[in-house]
Length: 153
Image (cartoon, rainbow, N blue to C red):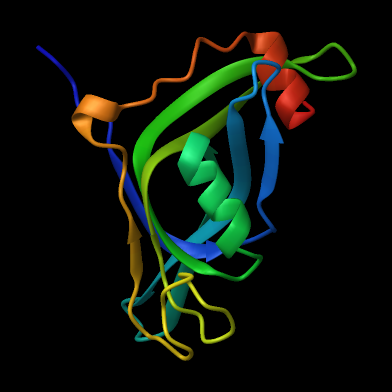
């Protein structure tokens, strides 16, 4: 049986996107994102739970995120969850869980244009489509050393 690994997040960036390139020139962007939920407990007291996510975007989505997003920007990300192992600078093996995004919707934040074609003050979200099936650009395999180099871990 095949499994499904799909994650949908709507939240705000916790830090500015960082755009880098792998040694073979593929654009990669990472940023932090926070999502939250609120509810009332059995005593009627408001409760809140905030989760923090590491987002990784590749190629065109990476460039778009770097150009239009900033700390605090609201964004919709759709992708898959992955966990990878790396060795930190002290030689200790660590694990990091990331969302590898393959779709993104830039949400209006009232401060910046979300699209070059969006009129000033636009409140319409801008959907950034993934590549068409026949034009999918799959980046070449990336080694763990390249990932460590790009993300500085």
